[in-house]
Amino acid sequence: MKHIYLKGLKMQKVNMGEKWRSSDFETFRVISVVDLENQTWIHYMRIRDNLEYSCLEESFIHRFSRDLSNARY
Image 1 (cartoon, helix red, strand yellow):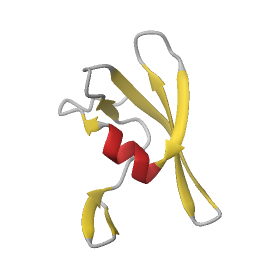
Image 2 (tube, helix red, strand yellow; image 1 turned 60 degrees about the vertical axis):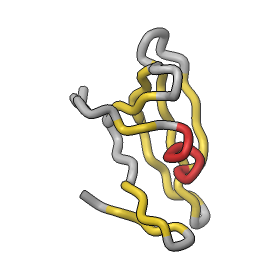
Image 3 (spheres, helix red, strand yellow; image 1 turned 180 degrees about the vertical axis):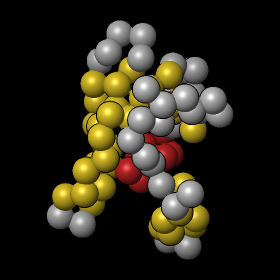
Image 4 (cartoon, one colour; image 1 turned 90 degrees about the vertical axis):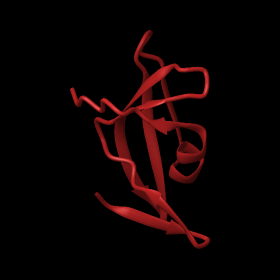
């Protein structure tokens, strides 16, 4: 598993196909990870209604927790 370091903190790298959960237990799937101009953008979809979102990887990691099942589709 790859790790990235941000301001001295070790964080897990987000991978395409993984499932993550929000604090209100909504489940999201990462649909793409894009490196653009020295920043990593995460594009993800809420599983229950297929709504798509995107944000920077740092924000994504703070907002969501990796789903322990992490079944990839």
